[in-house]
Length: 270
Length: 300
Ligand SMILES: Nc1ncnc2c1ncn2[C@@H]1O[C@H](COP(=O)(O)OP(=O)(O)O)[C@@H](O)[C@H]1O
Ligand SMILES: [Mg+2]
Image 1 (spheres, each protein chain N blue to C red):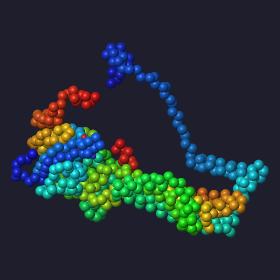
Image 2: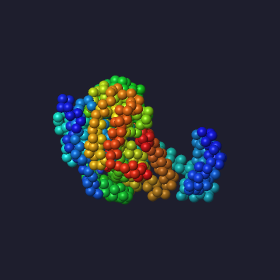
Image 3: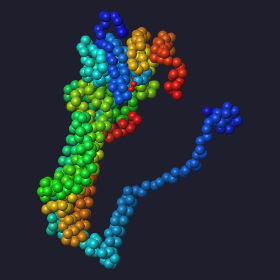
């Protein structure tokens, strides 16, 4: 799909992923024959209307759900249906309320078999560096939504997997916090040399963050189009007012709402 | 702001009038109420009042017996109860009987709660096994376990083991059901997260299922301590050589009303002490989980 230049190494290769859910009312085709390949170090956003199968797709990448057909290939190895190979973060921060922030952040390390004390030693400098040093011994309940998401993301990162899936991680945050979190995410992306797949329904967010954008059709989810963003980095906040940004946004919106009249939308919001 | 507010409420603005005509009428509001500030009495005043009431009851009881309008045979009297209590403690078997009841209750409580927690938690391992076992637990829960008393005495004898068995029978179902509810209410996304971070099934159990269900298990302990004591007492009523239940039974058979009251008093103190310890234990155990509740609330 994207990055057809064969020179760059393929980090993640998704081949013909299809998912059908069996329900009492019959089968639901949630995802239909999606193929994507992602190069190492790229930031890719997937956008699509709610219910088009984005979360289903991520569950399949992360090995938490078996696809009806198709394969997930990481670094040339077939990892279909294998959990724990790709890091995954959901919209909910899913911090464990009975653990302090530090102990939440080391949760992944612990699961990798590292002792608690060693894991804490490893994690402390990261907490300090990425703005959570002061909250080490707080319980998640005492933190704001943004800080909790930071902790959740650090937990994901410390597992040392270089592909990260983020499913609408900032959707529940207010605009100010979201902007700060976006900056923070880009810092981590550079520092850790990550390959990121990012789901959002916010077109501005997708363009602002990404190298590539994949637009899915409404259910069943198919790749409607995918294209590089091409805006220079680092991107300033007011990039959203440039004509190039406007063109990209227009393109995304056209693709998202293709084939729907404005009456459809009004009926939906009513 | 102020300007627009005045025009809206006072001025004859035609556009606004037209709009309010189209809006359906709402019922008239009730008149507001003036909230009175309430003053809390200091704790000392509350405790004094309680003491005064208690003293008044005892004084009325004692006076009533002496004046003859309360039947001393059925009701005994505070002074007589105090006399019998002194004899029971100094010359009788008070210590031995209390120790017997206490021991049976604590052992039954701990064993029953642990067994129940183990059963409830183990149902997480297999959804199918859980579906098979669940109706059995529900039915066993419905049986009035006290009715098993005579059977259990026949099986386990008149010693302490039958009392412990009754306490276990009464308590384990409560914890099993609580733990199973806890297991069922675990956030599936936490389980997913653990797998996605490289965890195994055992990790999920130990690090997610167990701590998530802990508040549920703990909440059953408070009920269990009372049930364990009740089970032991029933066992002692039916047949026993020791225990406060046996003392009360014996006193009843010999029309020793004062001794019945002594037994009840010691039992009440024992019950309150055990309950207090469990509540304290609960608080210690819940310390870490307290924040769990608040965070769950704040995300709503
Ligand atoms: N476990 C499931 N069983 C049946 N249908 C499901 C299940 N999970 C998701 N779906 C359906 O699949 C579609 C895609 O869901 P999802 O991936 O959550 O969409 P998105 O994340 O894009 O909003 C939805 O229509 C949803 O109802
Ligand atoms: Mg979703």
